[in-house]
Image 1 (cartoon, one colour):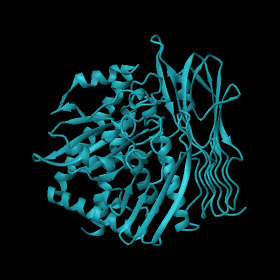
Image 2: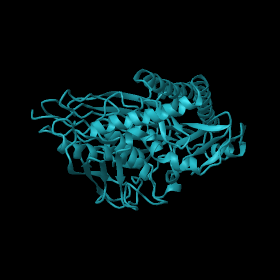
Image 3: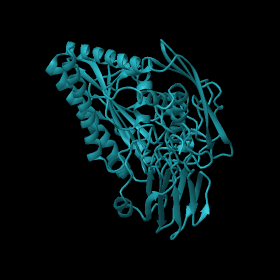
Image 4: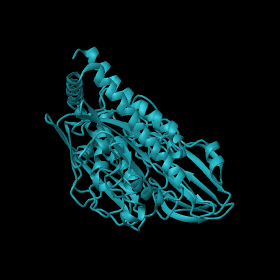
Length: 511
């Protein structure tokens, strides 16, 4: 293919993912998907290799890129099928992230897959928001092994009923699943049009060329890293079950063959829910190295061919069933990015920015009252780490998340909650020649009894500065003025006020 035709082909695949995302957003019922955009869409080839993805959630897409081949190989696919899953040990991330996969056939032959993954604020956990302080996987909600939600175009109503019956708001849950089904149907239709327009052989050749081009760009970028071994260790605050200062260690082995990220020396899996499956760890590693590649690098499997991952079975980053994983997907994945970037900072002095706020600052809340049940979940941004070419941005979602905040008007209209304050946390960014970004302050007042869960990090270990820059300020959580642990559950009464102060980013260079 010529460079121009390859670019057009790549753009058309990206457009398929973008259209899927628009369909999913516009058809979804829940604010978590419709307003926060906590979803991702992608296209895979017939073997389950990533071909294209929209600019959605890195932890969703990287984990799908790592695990999809194994998922699709176990299923006998037919036209009109759609398979649903959320099992973290069979290709998922954590239980609220529910994935739908649909095959794309042309002239009776399997040509590709479309998939989307969306975060459901209620997937059947006992605590509202389905992000509990859990000890085993089944504490976190309904586990869905890969199963047909649609077979040959016919809905499998028993499967949908089983899933939605586990939730407190069946209508909202069913609406979100309908939106996910519609997104895959739209993506499949557009791929069929693309194949019909250019021909099946040109489509297959285009996928080969696209992955080869991405691999060339990836190898050129990795060649800028000097050969050697570069290590870094950082820590999670705690696991919510009493274990603190949990180490994550990486050794990057860089050679002409590529990069191996070896996590030997990382803590063993823990009793709390900061464990994660290997696919989540892979997503974080892929993301960190993708940041070194030029912007035009296609988001496909070829870009990840030079990158290998090692994590001992049974460690925090390659947990064994039935370890709890709810926070591993959101908090541990973010710390993996920090340790990979920390190791790269010693390999590429001055090029790597300081640590960002390092937590998705997860807040889950709601009520199990059968007369007025509700579930709500959000992540809150913080300070971005500063770099050589610019100061850190303030009040941003960074690294493994790419969601929006939920508009205050939506929160107050849908739930018995008032957002009393939403502001930048001035001065929380680390000092430096370029200051780290400031975190956020978000204060909730509850107007009815509710249950709340917090899964947060960087309350003990501050986001580090680099090249002589200062650390960002750690975050804090308070209920009615009293400090709260970084991970906790509380019963709330009308009038209670919950304040989340998110960490600032690290500074870059000596002040």
